[in-house]
Length: 435
Ligand code: NAD
Image (tube, rainbow, N blue to C red; front, side, top):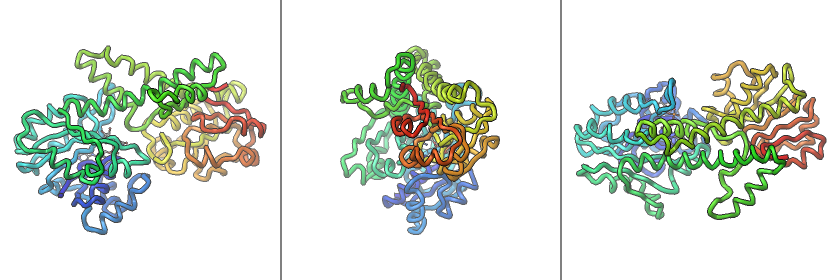
């Protein structure tokens, strides 16, 4: 099938390449010339495992092209909208400028019978408000939220754990059959395919992210209680996680969540609920956000305390900049936030990360970046693990670290290290919510 994908960021570039890899003819369209130039050459503009391979394959097959020219969308049966919906600069709500601009630019190229499938995460009600403009062209709008996880985006796009398609009430075409055809390999595998109305589809996405954020902040709240009682939150998480109704996943206490989705999605959900007169229904999300942000303070405080009450001119190496491993995404990264705060307190901060240094340097040029892990920790007074890359969590042996650093302090912002192993080597090990 001929498809267009409008917006070629973390979501759209992967979607375009993944759709080509399952046999569709895809054009990816974006307003960012540099991104499109890179993609057209088969270069992934960001780090995502598996993306370079499917990009190269799609381009070589002739089924995958990229352009900044919106008219290239003409003739596609389905047009996916995957542009950004960031937090507004002056509020909690989602900024829909890019969604509106993308739809406006697409309208002249739509034909009767086309399907526009929104994938961006939007406030509930957005699809209904876009519908009249799209219907005038004879095209149909559906909402098909995306649940991919960065780091696993290729796999999640080709083989998702569920597909959700929201359709409007006055739809005469059969967009659901067309979407089933788009996702034929997943459908054939029996992947749950849930058809809803537009509002439900929009809400499914934000509800899922609100739940995940709440789960993380729940365990981080328990970490705060553990810290004043001497309890160990990791044991607590193991113990409650054995209950299948609770489950152990997303119960890792640490410096909390970040990235381009969870923080802005829960804020946008709160803002939208307020507009709908139901602010109280999700008032807890404010608390979820606050618990999350407090954990960054806690990590910074642990470093300060361990270094004798102040970090001025102390050498602190921050292990990680990306908001999570297997990604170079630094949007709202708790890792980078901890680094910036320590720098603000006068520490000489060195940041290392296997993939995210270029992105981090663009946003925070004031920090020192060293790509090589061992060079980065050389002569450090303290180490702070903030992104659980294997290089730091599994492969950094305390005995080896001892040969390089000046001090023996490690703050484990992800509770990913073995405290006994570090202490046995003479280190002061400080975790989150652990004695
Ligand atoms: P992103 O910032 O990486 O990409 C957005 C892209 O849209 C950019 O390349 C930008 O240049 C492009 N764009 C902006 N205006 C445009 C226009 N008028 N026409 C064409 N292109 C335009 O963002 P992202 O992470 O890919 O997220 C996109 C959407 O998907 C957001 O709503 C996000 O919440 C949602 N989402 C993201 C993920 C994720 O893991 N990144 C997962 C699920 C859902």
